Image (cartoon, one colour):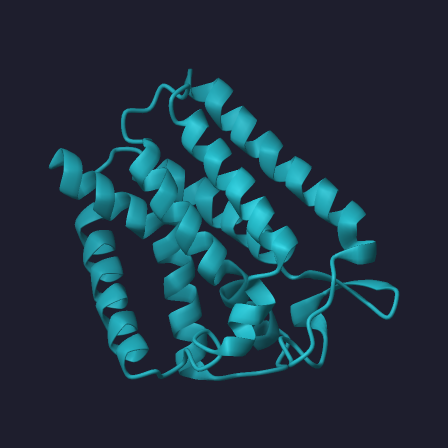
Length: 203
């Protein structure tokens, strides 16, 4: 089972790299508009706090495969891709947009950021495939989903919204967190609780 799984994610990652190199399915990901959408002060600060916290927690979890480098890799990949990948998946499920290659790339980037990058890092550094791969595969993609939702929170015309649910997603105009702040606090609290539970369980 593990051999088939590893072969699957390596093949999927290679195909994703091919599409990214050809700018297929990633037109929105590599635009100035997405950069402007992502590089808002509150998103940058929340990313920094989350990344530092994740790295710090690695010192207290009883898990030799969880260290500062893989925490940094997963944090950066999540921040840069989760708002896009989660949005693409949602809009595809609702039939708002259906670009087959973009959906494939988004799902693979989701999995690579949340799970496969961890597997690859531990495999390369320790020389053995992590026995915790299945546990990480269960938890990390859910956290990735929550971060993707969190960094899509906006306030439009006094309404608290999730940006990718709107007809115009990542347009020329950027919107503040505003009325979505309460939802953001609740979401961040859920994420923090999951991290805390994971650290306590593994000690």
